[in-house]
Image (cartoon, rainbow, N blue to C red; front, side, top):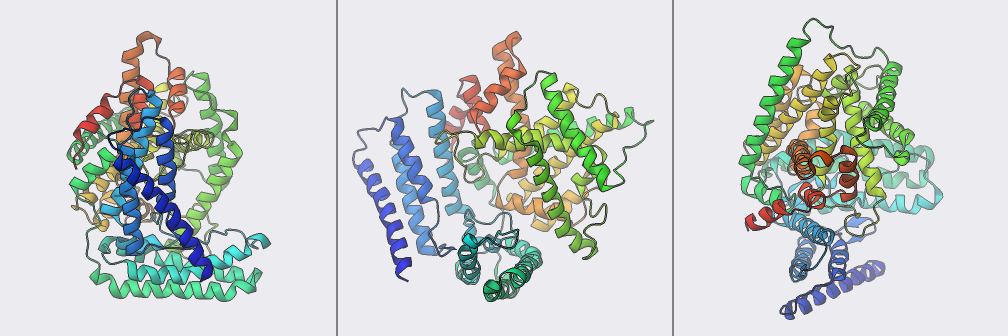
Length: 565
């Protein structure tokens, strides 16, 4: 108890210092702050404020604590607004708007999302949209646990019953669809803790009782959710007005819900028309065949990765750096794929068959089985390369870990853009023309998910409606009805507002950005120079990338002057 008191007292002292600094800034508002260091100071304070109070691995999401955090955020926003960026470089001004957007993200969490009071899955390990902290997250994948980690492991296990009891108190305005989602994944949560209990029995009997208590608490939480779900009636979607606010203030996207819907439908029209033309042109060709064994599947993937690395360099697009970590990516991808199959094969075909080939094949399994190059390009050259650049970015603000998914449109848009644009550059020229169909089918399916995203948040679709829609909309009926992919993607849509819509608009934003550079540079434009500048901009919203590359802040100016309160 004494340790808890001193830790909390220390946190209160830090927050009080931030509050007093804010008050002093407000009182001297006639003397605008103008130093770049002022922005750094505000940003560092914000990084402290947005973290929950954690005692013995238990995060505090009580009403009073969340209210205190919101007050501190308000004061930090006042400090930020008092900073005058006149005379700053473009990069420094970009960082100012990056900090502002991230603060708006936390504001949106307090005013609209409030996952600690709306989302029962916020407190579960198997829910991808769970909270901004991993306190209480028992992530020891390999047993035995090292001696140096045993004490922490014990604290994490002891925290689980407390976290789940606190959840029952905090969930005052829970959403029906988010409760439905939590209950859907509850069997996986229970299986996770059964595994932990069994591993503790085998390797760490000193942790066994704590593991049993954690498992019991998870089972009881599931029972509590089941008995209280009828009272959880709040809509999960944020509504059009809130969606618009999030897009402009956090994602820095200059479009409304209605404009985004229209843009995506026009893109979907293009994709469906084009793939039908491809199918007609290829009508006399054999269909692509999936691999016949796990070994063939792995070989196809490795061949695709080797090929795409060489292709981007030989075509003078960009160079894949030596540090990218080819072996690291393969091991990570294989582990992820095995974990995905192990989890869901058990669900769909029963235990004991997780090593069978091919296992459960959902939409992107079926496209990648026929040609792995588009998907591996997306994951490896897209995401893995991005993460490598970001991990090496030492800038205090741009190089920091982003909160509230404000980088998602940039990340997903770039990776998605690669699939089709490299096809036009020729990366499928030596393959069957049928491979082009894979690119368009993957793109069309992403339009399905984007529409589901928009309609869930306008509250036209329930979670189940969205899951059914993407199965019906998926090309070739390749998405399993009510299957694992649809469940996973639609719950991320609910928790990360605009995720799959953002993938489509991010791809189109890439085209817009490149076209703008071509207009500026004309015959001097080269893709290699463009991508050098693109990666140097950092993992930031696309409107800020545009500002960095073109020197023109017209999109940001539109957003700033069109922001609604």
